[in-house]
Length: 252
Image 1 (cartoon, helix red, strand yellow):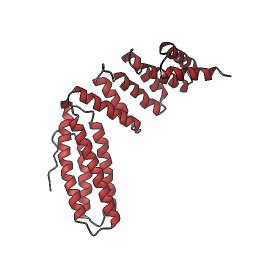
Image 2: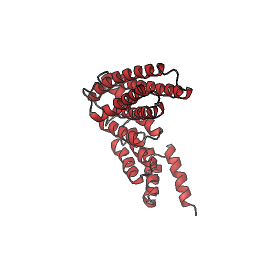
Image 3: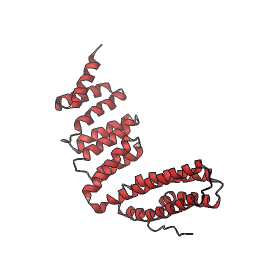
Image 4: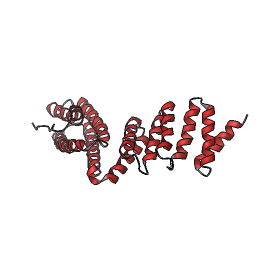
C-alpha cells in the first residue's frame, strides 16, 4: 500500500483531497461486486475535491506546497482508478460508463490544479491579480456566491489600488444582491466609490445602491441616489436606466 503524503497539509484539506478518493477506490478493489455504493462515494469525494481546489486558488504560498503534494497523490489515484477499471472488464456496461465519467471528472480536477500552478504567485503579481479576479467573476456567474464573495474580498484586500479594485468591490455587492441580502448589498455598493472615486464602476454601483434601497422600502433614499447618478454621470448607461426608473416612479 502506498504511503499518502501529509507534509505541509492541514488535516481537513488532506481528508477532502485524498481520503475520499483513496477509500472509495480501495473499497472498489476489495469488493468488486459492490460498485454502486463505491461509485457514489468516489463521486462525492471528487465533488468535495473540486470545492477544495476552488478555495485553494486564493491561498498563500504555503498552500502551493499542499497543491504540489496533493497533485502527486491525485496522479497515483488516477493510475489506481484506471487499473481498477481494466481489471473489471466483466462488469456491466452501466458500471463501465460510470467509471469513464468519473475518470473524466478526475481529469477535470487535475486540469484545475495545473491551471492554479501556472498562475501561482511565482508568476508575478499581475498574473495572480487577473487569475483571482477571473475566478471570482466565474464563480459569481455560475452562482457560487459564497466562494465568489471570499475571492472578491480577498482581491480587495490583496490589491487595494488597481484598475480592478472597484470592480471587485462591486462584485462583493453583487454577491449579496443576487442572494436578496439587500442591507449588506447596500453597504458594499456604497464602498465602491470610497475605494475608487474615479473608478469606472461608480455609476453601476450607484444604480445598484438605489435598487438595494428600493428593495428595503427606502424609497426616498433610493430616489435621491438615482437623481445623484443622473446629475453626476449623465452620459452613462446607468443614468439612462435611472431616468426611466425615476419617470416610472412619478407616473400616477
